[in-house]
Length: 405
Ligand code: C5P
Image 1 (cartoon, rainbow, N blue to C red):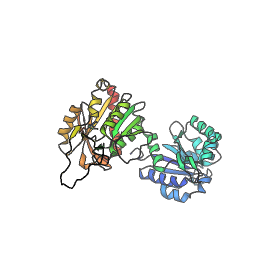
Image 2: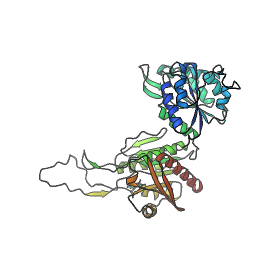
Image 3: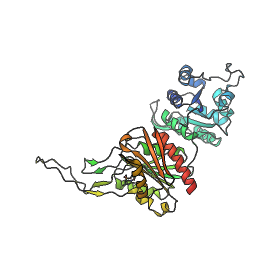
Image 4: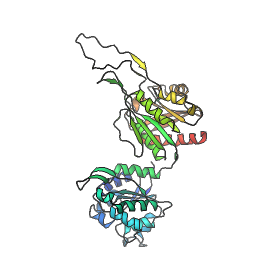
């Protein structure tokens, strides 16, 4: 949503990672942004302006002498009114030119000519590992940051040249997430947020256990939205197969007790605790050391249960939460009578905000419909993507902590 109707300038300098810029352009256009592509001469050796024009739906700027601009100033036209410039790939050569403030070709000219107060400059470096670690490159990286550019970091691993190390350009989806973060209002700047997500798994024996259908998607969306809002985020995840949102510190756990320990380790320094995890209420009283075997008699094993710690309720009962230094948010997945159960659960857990949903109609999906319960009453949030709902929830949480804190 943040990218809807935004004006993004996508600059490409020369590097094999240009193929990823094509995908990035597609993602930006799909998210509703208007993309103006600018390509250096080197970039055109790797990918054609025709490809980028087809993907962006706009002619590509390839030269400062482009006569199709009536005022003959493509570098000014592209940057006035733009929301952000992202250079991906940013080659070692381009970096050196930017560090020097070179204005003899259109891409660096445009970066230097941008109104730096209003147009952020994001750089996604892409180069061979030796080029990346070279002192000149490292010096240039420091210089462009000092001059106001934001570095997006690099990936590590196998490189196109066959070598392995640092310097690979981030994936298109990662750069896309960084662009969203750069454009998001920093509603939680300076705040620390601890979030639980996903199901827990309670072992019966070494190969079996009890779990639930939570996918973790809502919790991961909350972590991503909190980070985009400028918070430092600790995400404590049960067993899920989801990618960690960029810039989020993740701890993986299996059982409810492990989740409780991980929360205890981070919640004391947090300002906000968000419990989205579907924590198992009970665990088998005994975890068998060996696999429980069928003995052919037709008898089924008897399972006895014991209650798990209620993580949210105990955090909400802590002195910091009671004195409003820690703002607690609970989630409730119900199978019906949401309003009634939601109100009761908020009271029982002792939290200022509880977010309710109908479990069976959200587990595993990318969308959800919510009801938010607070002292002010109930607020219905109609079905939308979990990402969109998460950013609305984070805005509400920020507003509530601002007025409380
Ligand atoms: O009681 P119920 O499981 O429905 O409550 C759901 C809320 O409480 C969620 O926010 C969930 O993360 C949290 N919870 C918890 N520890 C438990 C059970 C639930 O933190 N043992």
